[in-house]
Length: 182
Image (cartoon, rainbow, N blue to C red; front, top):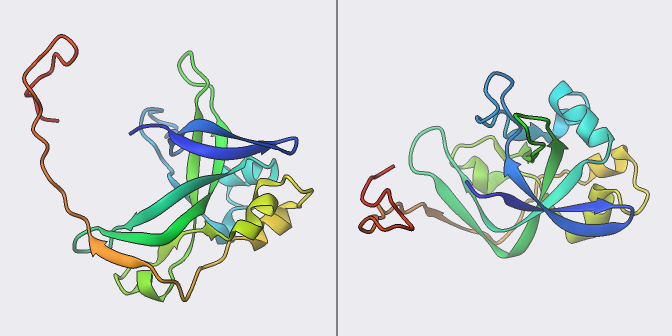
């Protein structure tokens, strides 16, 4: 998976930082776990509370998001305009590196997502809430948590994800693995 471009704020200045998806698993840093944080307990769950309280909050811009129901095909929800997903981030000291990692904040599913059935969905931030979530206007952690709401009454389209098998080209110097499938 490629790094995610996460919008962060430092001293009132917004910029984009590349981050990996998911905090590293304590048993194996290469495996992301956890990958999501519940909005309801973001300030009390040990894995997330410090990052939340310290303002390590970011935004991931998206045009769509996927939800996997308990059974059946994964569904893609396409938004009418780009939206910002609330993210938490931290820096980890791992194996001669200090990667930044981010987790998505989730909220209870709205009626559309809940029909899958799925009980969670991304916390999509209203554009007016970005400053409070990022903490670039003196917002408190309580102000930031108040931004995490289930979005109802939206005009999203939903479609089953179409997966196609991509065939790799013949081996070259630039791509020595050639026809191996992964």
